Amino acid sequence: MVSKKIKENKLFKFLTNSYVIIFSSFLVWMFFFDTNVQLNKEFKKEIKELNNTINFYKKEISKDKKTIIELQDSLQLEKFAREQYLMKKDNEDIYIIEYDTLKK
Image 1 (tube, one colour):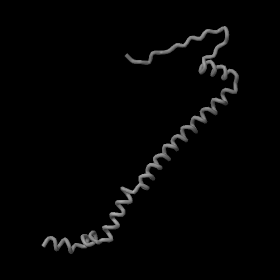
Image 2 (spheres, rainbow, N blue to C red; image 1 turned 135 degrees about the vertical axis):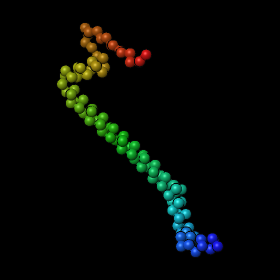
Image 3 (cartoon, rainbow, N blue to C red; image 1 turned 90 degrees about the vertical axis):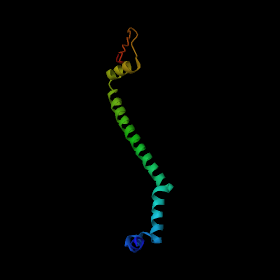
């Protein structure tokens, strides 16, 4: 008696239709098991990472351009050489002071 009611239900008839079963299995296959979908996700992730890398290098290029403009001045160039490359004049002594940053 219960099975008769279930079999007469419109939803049951629709879901047991062979076309619906085949189409739904096709959709499940395409969305979860198809390799092209997985490759597409991987490519999107890679594109996002590459765009982040591009933005990072654009920022670095703008910093370097500013530094190049600042180094056009001879005093700034001397200051840069002394700080970055520890260059000195012949009659100078350089002392490097390092701070202990470890907390005890």
